[in-house]
Length: 127
Image (cartoon, rainbow, N blue to C red; front, side, top):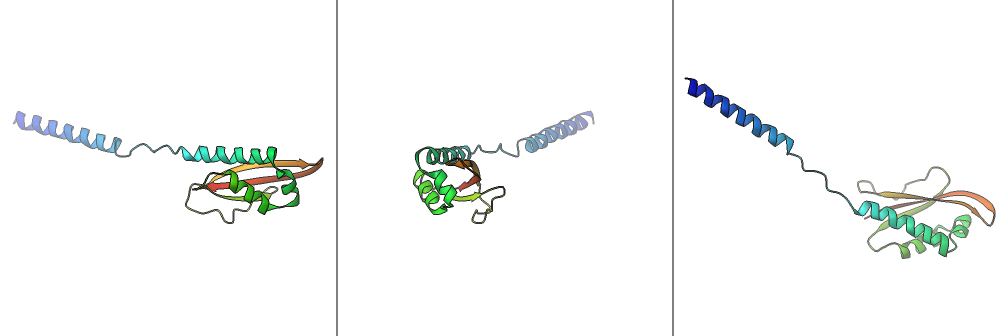
């Protein structure tokens, strides 16, 4: 009788260990998404490049969103979708898709020709 009880104890312990290991290693670690920080970096660099090499501040002061978008589309890599708006405080995310990983980059334009503007460019990007 001692052998049967000992065998049952060992089977119970082995089953408990297996169940514990199953619950511990059930979920795999999340995969790291390298493209999201790269998208944010590319967007910030594109806006800074537009500010230093193009007339971005004039376009913002004039509200020329079409010129801003066309220049930005030529600077961003292919396959990267984007939406750009000019706003002051709150930005409307009208055409930004739901259910995708979306990256937002804010770029502040304070002045143009010694005139205070106080605008914010918000750039949304997704693949």
